[in-house]
Image 1 (spheres, one colour):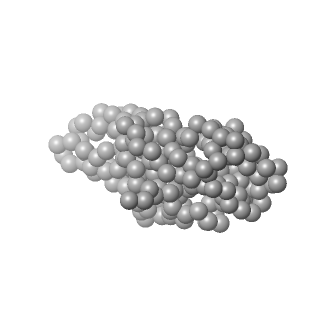
Image 2 (spheres, rainbow, N blue to C red; image 1 turned 60 degrees about the vertical axis):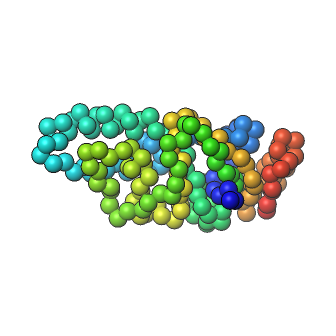
Image 3 (tube, rainbow, N blue to C red; image 1 turned 60 degrees about the horizontal axis):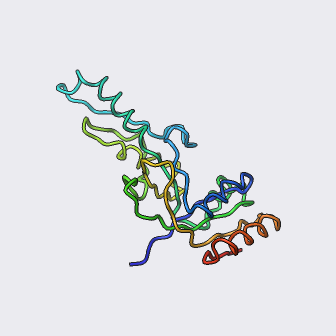
Length: 189
């Protein structure tokens, strides 16, 4: 079976982060509260009478569990105008095609479910049930998430697509790095 390729849109203004992806074959996985969606990780909860007395402890425990989960956000789409604008410095960056390597640190990997409202959780819900859901306003991202306990997710870089406004200087530097350290990566304009 063919490995599925997902895409990470990146600006090149913090070039060291791009170089880290290529040289160390890894992507950063952020804590949910640092992501750009202010409603990330928020939810409603539904309790019955038996569980109500434990609600404070449950909410605290659930938050602590969520804190241990880190999110690596990818897209299924390699040519999304809004993604280029929002995450690749207005088309000046790159879109990196990757496959995710198997790892014991990965708790869950899959497509995000987009909802009209915040998710409603039951007493025995898991953090990934919340972290795999977002409001429909974000559905243009076509997001695939990797939830991990590690700060980095191991990947194989398959291709790099240059943004339409990527400078010739950045293209030259990226080409030199790829040729020297990862010549198997396909470069596309």
